[in-house]
Image 1 (cartoon, helix red, strand yellow):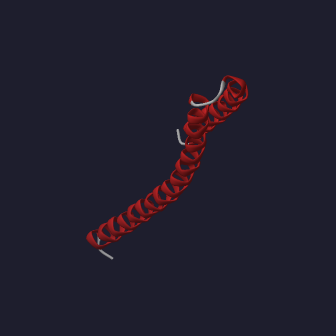
Image 2 (cartoon, helix red, strand yellow):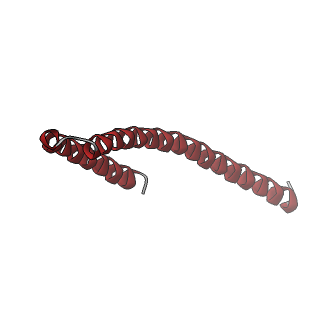
Length: 91
């Protein structure tokens, strides 16, 4: 085998290795996108619940205000924690 053929074979092998790594990264990016979308959907659900609590708080009577405020604060804390976890996970 000539040096040129050997070099061509090495170059071809290197290209195949690079293409395989690119495909791996593409798959990881797709998987991460699915995971990120699922996380975002969960956060949006919690946000929706929090917004409903806010609306209840806004229009509540003085007697119900305290209970609704506590529920709102718990929901806000839960959403805040979920966002922190997501930020850490996808960092």
